[in-house]
Amino acid sequence: MAQRLATEYVNASLRLSEVQMSQFIHKVYDPHVRQRVKVLDNGGQEVVLEDDSGEEVHLPFDRKDGYYVCELSFRLEKPHLTNVMRLLFAAFKGSGMVTRIYNGFMMMYYYQEGRVRKIVEYSRDSYKLVYEHKDTVGELQRIYRNNDVEREIEQIHREVNVLLDQRFVAQDSTALQRIDGELRKHTRRLFVLEA
Image (tube, rainbow, N blue to C red; front, side, top):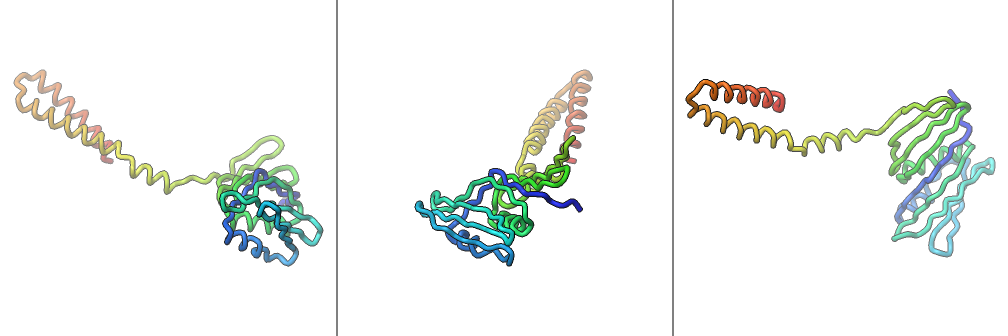
């Protein structure tokens, strides 16, 4: 297995309520990572996480519209602090791009509200889409709500009724053949739509 050299958070953002901020501060369970909290002048807080090796990350949370908001980019190299940040980012629904750097390639994870939406592998020569979230349930709901097919079926039924009325009163064979041809065409289309 490839050894990770570093992890970069780019345009990372967290938006926490008062209760979530309290949970965030008390969520670090790794015995190798210590934390400090600084209260800032504007009512915000800065959470500082530091591991045994001295690597640290400063997470400044500003107060905006009743929430604590943290937006920043940073790089981590040590596994303990990297793991703690990964868990916090997912648990508190962080958004942004996380790049895991290995020798010879990078894995870019695109997060939205704590969930991975896309993973792309970049090497010197190429890139490969590894995973992309597809909103299958949402797509099925859109298809289910889409009633274009039902409207077309109703329109064909109306046209068939008109053609049957015309056929009932038609007298010459040319008109009957034309009407029968139209009816066959509508029958095929109904078969396709109802399938």
